[in-house]
Amino acid sequence: MDCKSRQLKFSILTLGCKVNQYESEALEKALSDRGCASVDPRSIRGDRLPPEQAPDVCVINTCTVTQKAAMQSRQAIRRAIRANPDAVIVVTGCYAQTRPEEIAEIQGVHFILGHSEKPAIADLIGSLPDEKAASPRIERCRTADFKVFQDMPETPVASRTRSFLKIQDGCDQFCTYCIVPHARGRSRSLAPERVLDKIRTIRNAGCREVVLTGIHLGAYGKELEKESSLYELLVKIRDLDTIDRVRISSIEPNELTEDIVALAADWPGFCPHFHIPLQSGDDGVLERMRRPYTRDFFRRLVINIKEKLPHAAIGADCLIGFPGETEAAFEYTRRLIEELPVSYLHVFPFSARQGTPAWKFPGKVPDREIKGRCAIMRDIGNRKKRGFYESFVGQRLETLVEERRDPESDMLRGMSANYIPVSMPGPDPWKNTIQAVEVLEVTRKAGKLKVMGKVIGHIADC
Image (cartoon, helix red, strand yellow):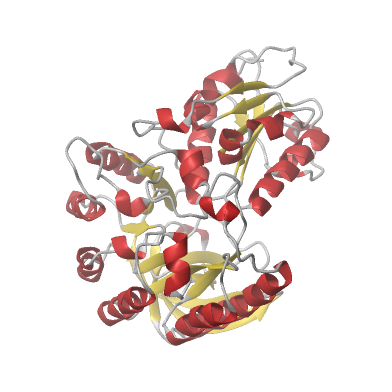
């Protein structure tokens, strides 16, 4: 198979985090630059599409952060094989890095590639042999060998509005429940000058917003030869003054410093949106998780953010059912979230991962109990989100209008700086502009919240 001799078609399905999404987008750009054609990823998911949409190569970028994520990765691989029996199946990502032998048991997989092999996938696909091997080819390095940040060759630009940018990889924290350090290795950072170069590229491609992502974002720069920090990098990006909006992805509570919060309050281009993993509101559980903060620290942090940035969106992760989580410990978590001005929640049931200390911890919480506690927390999260959205009815939000319209209403869609998705009527020329939008109402349709608004002023052109 050769992209140049005939237009090879490929499709990429991504599971898991924003870092995976960034890496898939970089791979898609690399393949497109080589003359390959991207086709609808629904072909991997098993949807029936016209023959011309059938991919020659299916890439599944997997996740293994929980047992459910690993199961979903296996299901996605099997669906891709059934739906595309003539395609070459390439599996990469965290599940491929940690459990390649499990993937190799799935008949029909041709390549299993670890993280260090991701940048070479485009070259591999461009020179695939016409005959497929009967058994999968496995290539991966040990995570202990991941010494420096692995920069993807191309800077992806998935759309002309917002673009992810991975600036950090790996994690040194080794929480007792987490498999990610074993999948991604130790913390590594992209040099500040390369970050700035990539932001220039992203803006030159037409994007208005960059989302800085990493596995352990708050650890940015600590291992560089010339030590740096996330705060110092953000100041450099502010001074570069080339991109309209900068957003940061998930950041640990103890690493969201006073300096970063103050910078967000003073810099109009810094999106007032913080996603802060709590995991538990009980100090005993936090200690067993090896989380380096207390419930009171988290409380003070959230209150401080709201005092300095009243409009800020604050998201939180809760990990429910960790071994030894008593009813009283769960109540500490529930009450803490109820009391704090949190804007939304991501709720996860505890999932024991082989190779982590928590795999052998006593005090397992029954699955039925975990499910019930998760339902309680998700209900709180839904109420918090609706309340946050409704607090802006009648107010003005600076909203970046996205390239794609809402397929159900045909209205324009946009994202406010403080992470509120807004639908509004308007013409196509408003796409990829920043508009002042008045929020009119918040409704629930088919289980999803809808924020409706109208444009009341123009802020920035393409």
